Length: 415
Ligand SMILES: Cc1ncc(COP(=O)(O)O)c(C=O)c1O
Image 1 (tube, rainbow, N blue to C red):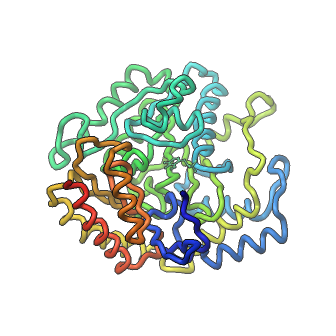
Image 2 (cartoon, rainbow, N blue to C red; image 1 turned 30 degrees about the vertical axis):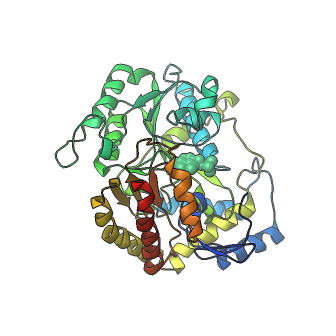
Image 3 (tube, rainbow, N blue to C red; image 1 turned 120 degrees about the vertical axis):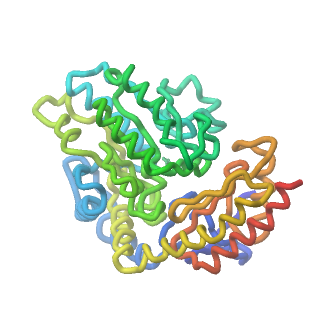
């Protein structure tokens, strides 16, 4: 039976019978400033009373214009054009479709293949599911998935080329380089989750890996799609993960935290180069893609309020405080006999447990989930990987409490 939730405030959810649950995974990674933040709630109310919705074709409105301008100030400067959609999956679909049509509009329709990473996850719609790696999420839909070329992820705890991070020179990139040398003339784009692969296991990549992907794609004239749906808006310690690696992609997909976790809204940002290939008098060059609720004014107002909070509250101080708790707590976990790896980036920490049936369907997962809920903590392990991904308003004491709960749960992994 699903738990009935009647209220949310800060890091807490409250069940119908009055029990408090600490939301340590930001309700599937969307919440950043805490549940029911009053400034976002007020912005939604005001906007709903003024203009609830208008089609976004031949029409525009102030909340969307403001949001485009706000995003323009925080994304890499080259990403000057924005295309709104509904959620993370549709932001990815837009990037994939635009990448293919870009090459077609440029008279190079043979550049139509996509490269994606092992362990990647980009959403549940057909295109996004195709670029995601094979998993229990995709198994039943094999006939629907378009073929993609797959390259290594920088999963250092299980290095795909058998090296160790302390001495390697990011040799996991060699496979991508080879693919680009052999087939670059047929490849439209490479898609990555920059620095942090979420649903695939909270896998943290070295910054050099992302920088290398950018270097290689630029050298082989292949577009780079950075799926920042999870990593955007401070999750990895900077506003965007791309910033940490000092790169600018050709497309950036954002969603989840964009509205602070209040409403579904997404955007795909891109460059002049891509944008200009879609302009001109020939109608066939247009990007024929639109959703009924594209750039919904209420969702845009929620996003504007969410971004304003970055200016009005000490958000990056909170993020730094979370990261220092992760840094202090994880080394002890790494030494525990049941732990295979303990890693973190920014606000996200992951503890990979040793089990005989590793993977999303590990039999340990439901036991851990129930254990945590009984202790009043919402943690939803990815199989044998327990991760913490809290709203930024969690206090260091609350976060230490989450770690205490996880420490107590390790006995389950030992049995
Ligand atoms: C990196 C990434 N991309 C895309 C998505 C899909 O987003 P949505 O669930 O909003 O469609 C997710 C969702 O978890 C994600 O983590």
